[in-house]
Image 1 (cartoon, one colour):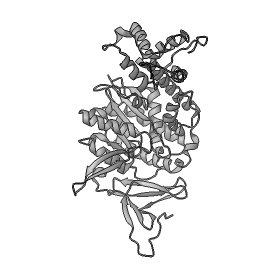
Image 2 (cartoon, one colour):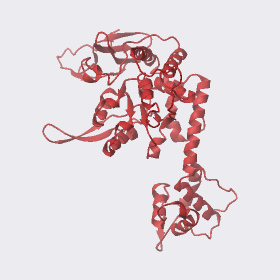
Image 3 (cartoon, one colour):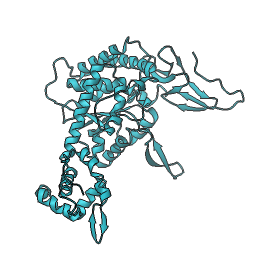
Image 4 (cartoon, helix red, strand yellow):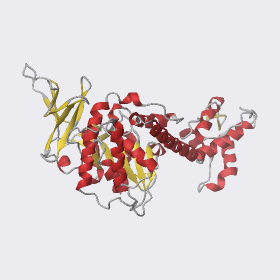
Length: 442
């Protein structure tokens, strides 16, 4: 089976591009592999039924793809890891079992998160069939096992890019754009505020297709050259605390690492056996990709009563979970995560303001719903809980920017119009604010 298109008879010179792979006609894929013994890179071309090795792939008479060289610094120093060849694994359930056994052998996680990490590894090998991806994150202090998690789970993911090998955050944009793999990110490695802000750009833009990061570079001619970098893809992240951005928090399935003594049997150091086992599993996962990439979307299904945003972000993960009981367990985990988000919202200043608005609305049509009235009632209830004093301007800002309510000015007074009050029911539901159905509305 040869996927290459014959060169043009007109003598047209083809453009050669370095690549880690691509989709091909007739449900075939090209995937770069690296043989660590022969120090050789090439493409595996085919599908789950038949495949072969190719030195290059011609997409058209004018475009030819070649794999990155085995002498490439990133390949040679294992900044990015590859499979070496497709390897048979039996049934999908056997592959899942092998992945989970590997994870359990080398890192100490809760059973719940161990299962999530196992299926996330599987998902990274087909993530590019979807337009959204979730992230997996571990959180903890020094010595809690975060790095071991990144090394263990990351070594099984498709094209893992280990960010700790970068001296600064700047190369990450180029690495993600070139290899389109799984970013393995120890956020604690980036100590300075400017580096952290660049990392946040990658995380904020990288969970949905079509949102590249734009960076301005200087050409050899000293001209500014804006460039878009593709950062979409799965990510394993380790942090010491929470992300300040709540939207970013909602994209992460998180495990709080316990630290302390290791579970008996977990080795203190990772040796050649670890690397050999990881390579073997990557080879099996490559065959999984060849077999399932084109039909994996059909396996996604119902996954609980989640909010639309969470369904959008985490729904693709269910595409690789065929076991009904595992789907139920992970759906339950996501539901708990969903409930935690609702509880956090219910304790926020937005929720406190909505409760004030709800009670003012319930007093009847004669109650004026001005920003000043809302502020006065908020001060009575919560004035002592905040370091800064609540002012109408501050309250109005929260109503506008965080709740999407637009107070309008009438005779010098800002108030919520009936059109804005009509939006309250959906906000009550979002923030878990109980509403008396018998209460009067304005």
